[in-house]
Structures are given as structure tokens and as C-alpha cells.
Length: 293
View 1 (cartoon, rainbow, N blue to C red):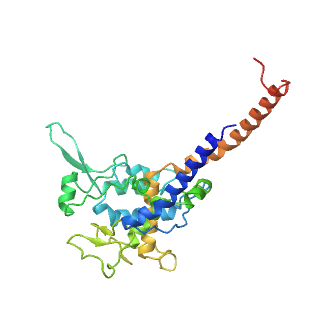
View 2 (cartoon, rainbow, N blue to C red; view 1 turned 60 degrees about the vertical axis):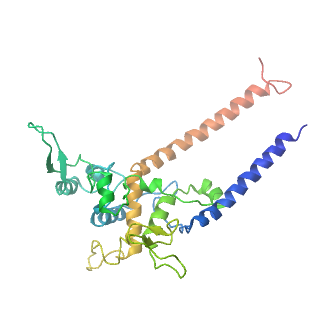
View 3 (cartoon, one colour; view 1 turned 90 degrees about the horizontal axis):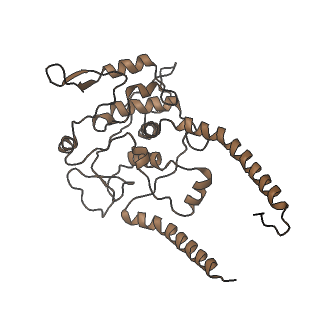
């Protein structure tokens, strides 16, 4: 028997492991530090969103992030749908009415502005990309709608092997949280920052155009019966909450998808048993172990 296929398989496996083990080094060469893995309520096959966290995250987004970043794929009414922040329809209608939405043309062929409606999508803070770059010194603030899925980092070996079994998919929120808390003074020997540049520990290359967006006590959270905030009003908590809200924006049907998958798994198990016993019954009638033609 030829050993060529076996040797090719070993060669391919060795090459794959070598590439996987070299990825963290390649990432380090870019100057990015791997973000720490956090615990999220929505992680794993049974994970669900924390409604209170999503509502806090929306508050951070509205009061801080929305001045530069849009969410063009999210409608106001999505905030009241099951599986999300689940604001009441009345709260959503009141929120939408605080925005001015460009509409038209009217009977005179002119565009006009009107109060927002629940069916409207979140308006962008800038009319176009050129206006955004002009206002931000040349930098373009990305849209938040799917950013939690678009941002990631290299986990490397052997972490990515375990991720297959744990279904780890939280690179996006881990990276977003790390970026929000990663603003620091440049270390000794780091090149002098140019105007418009900021040092961030987790940004590849450590240079980021966005100034530090969060500070302790910046956003007031709902108070409990004792008059105190139910969670800390700190940069770390703000970053966690807005990252979770961004995950919901990127995947608003996450809970439904996981629920359907759990219902579907028993059918796959039953199908596997049926296929096994069908194969066993058909092949068992063949003396030489091969099926009849």
C-alpha cells in the first residue's frame, strides 16, 4: 500500500499547524496586543442577551457614539422587537420623534425634514463620507450596524481549536471593549504622536484617530431604589455595555437562531440513528460485505 497520501496528509497538517502558530507572531509584528476574552451573557449555544445591558448600551451609543457613528441598518422599531433591548412601543415612538428625518420630495419637488417614525432607520450624523472625513480630520467613523461582526483578531493556536467546541464567536465584542479601555500614554521610546493621533494599546500599530470617547461618570445609568446606579458608571462598564449592544445590532436574531438550532439537534440525532440502522440492515444481507447491484 502506498504511503504517499498519508505523507501528504502529515505534510498538510504540519503546514497548517505552522501557519496557525505563526499567526500570533504576525499579529504582534503589526503592533496589536491580543484583547482578553471576556464573559458575555450571549456566548455559547445557550447564551442570551441581557436586556438591561442592551438598554444601557443603547444609552451609551445614543449619548456618546452616535455623534460620530451611524447605525444605518437599524430601524427604531427594532428596539422594541423580541430578542433585543425590548423597549416599549411608546418609548420607541417617543425616541424616534426626537430625530429629524430627511424625506421627500414633496408636491413642490423639494426635500424636507420631519419628526422620525418607528419605521425610520437611525439617521447618519453626517450627510456623506466626505463630510464625515472633513469633520474628523480625514478619518472616517465606521457605521456601527455590523461592526461587531466585522472586527476581529487572530486567536492563534491552540485557542482556535478549542473555539470549535466552545463555539467561541466573541472576537468582535472582546476587541471593541479592549479598544475602548486601551487608551494610554505612549511608552518611552514610542515615536511622537502627530496631531490627530492617539495611542491605544490594542489598536494594530497603536495609532488611532478617534480620541478617547469614554470617561468615568460620563453616562448616567438608571438608579435603583436606594438612588444609586445598579452597575458601575465606569469606562470598563460603558465599554462592555456598548459592545453588547453592537453585537445585537450586528445579529438581532441571535437568540432565535440559537433556539431553532436547539430544536433541530434532536432531529439530526434521530436521523443519524435511522441512517445507521438502515445501512446496517442493507449491507448485512451481503456475504462479502458489499451492497447488491
